[in-house]
Structures are given as structure tokens and as C-alpha cells.
Image (cartoon, rainbow over all chains, first blue to last red; front, side):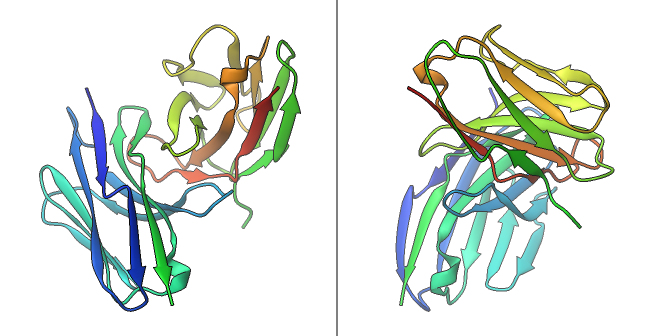
Length: 108
Length: 114
């Protein structure tokens, strides 16, 4: 069964304190691994797509990496506006399969 | 350009009532998806449309749930005889095509069944 597990469930950082969010997955045929950001009361906002092991994508303070069984979202020198839930998602046949998310809080 | 829009943003109904939730996808997107998100969880797939037809409805929980997309654009999710367990945020997403195309989400409709 296709499955996505994210850790930690919640993470509290001080502004400027870099860290990484983990996503482990099992899927019969990966059709892309996606990272989304979700703010309270809003729909998920697309960040990155990764297709093959070794691939990396960057956007501002975020960098996503992919191995055959895991993906990491690295956050460098985070700011309070980076506070959100980050969702790891695998592309299955005709649908996306979401992890439960990591709730990130960045404090000044 | 305009993103995915959903109406209403909030819907409160009583147990046993019928509700309709509307989704207006990004113009030109042929694929449309419905997901349901419970508190503290990631969204769960309900149904996928390619054009006017439901290509995959394997996520619909039971026959009280039904969705249509008659002209290949706007979609309506219909829930009959609502139950308290149907309370959740219902999200709609659209993509240019299918498969690995990026899905763009609307803001969701928060449904509360009393």
C-alpha cells in the first residue's frame, strides 16, 4: 500500500535556526514527490516536485532532496513567515497521497 | 490569473440534510480533483475528473457522496443525508493534464454537520 510518513509532527525553531523535515515513503510506482505548504484555513500551496533519486530543488530558504525511500525539506535560516504545515505528497495513479504534515513554528 | 475557487467557504448544516459544494478550476485545466481533510491530517483523495467524466471515484466513502462536472469546467460535490462524521474541509484541485502534472488547490469549503 502506498504510504507517506512525516517526522517530526511538530517543530519549533528560533529565527535563524536551520533544520530539516523528513518524509519517508513507500509506493509501487513513484510519479513524482511533491512538497506543499499549508497555512491555517487555506488550501495547500505547491512548493516543489522531485522525480528521481538525487534530484534537488531550491526556493528561497527551502531546499528539497530525494532518495529512493526518503525526501528531506531543509530550511536554512528560517523566518517567522516560514511558519506553516509542510506536506509531503507522493504522486500515485490518478491521485496524490499526502502525509499528515509537519507543523513548523518559527519564533523571533 | 485566477486560481481555483470554491464556494461556499463555510457551510453549516444539520444531520440528514443535503449539501452541494462548488469548485471552479483554473481556466484550461482539464483535470479536477476533490479531497477531504480532517483536522490534523493530510488531505485524502475522493474523486478525479478528466474532462466531464469521473476517471477515478475510488475515494468516495459511500453512495451518499456524488460529484459531477457536466461541462468539463465547474464541478459540484454533492452529499446526501449528511452525518456528523462528514464534517471536514473539502478541497478541490486542478491540473493542466493528469499523471505527474502539478495540482493547484483551492481554499477549501469547511463543512460542519450539527
